[in-house]
Length: 217
Image 1 (cartoon, rainbow, N blue to C red):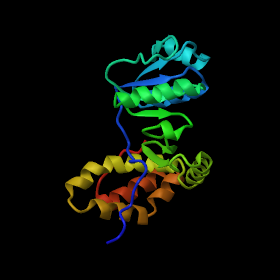
Image 2: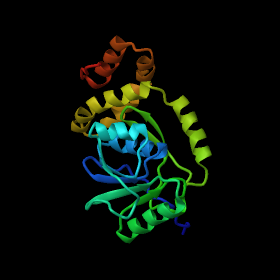
Image 3: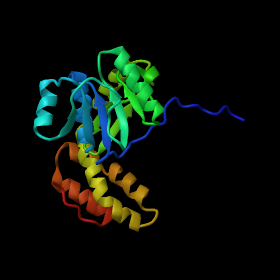
């Protein structure tokens, strides 16, 4: 019997739309974490006595809730995630301990030993997201791999995913044809035509393979 593989972290893409997420810290690192949470449409609370201008602007625009003051475990009920992003090791340790005591997933920036989850390096092409992680062992390697992926998967993949999304329902209604359609679309050079922004050829390839007309933005 082969040895069972053990993963250090469970890979997951988590829908946090409308959910309460807390970031402890008001600096530049915290601002980056907050910006990502807002992109995911989370309801974000920031705990910090002071805010960098970027976070202050978010507060002024009503994008975040600000709990002004030093961290004392004062986050809202129904919090689903906490990120510690201060430069104070004692505060970060308290954030981690408090969250784990309440069974709330926690991430402490640059300190994987205090984390329940870590944040991967990402390549984003529209709805396509490729995550890369070294389990916290080498952020520099994760960054290098991300750059290599960015060079391999260009912006054309955003359009490809959009087209495939429009075809998905029709593919599913034709049981067993989804994978066949995908392979034929790629074999007919769909990705290359997307790179060249040849909308006429794109429409024709899709029509020839699937019999469907798809609106190309």
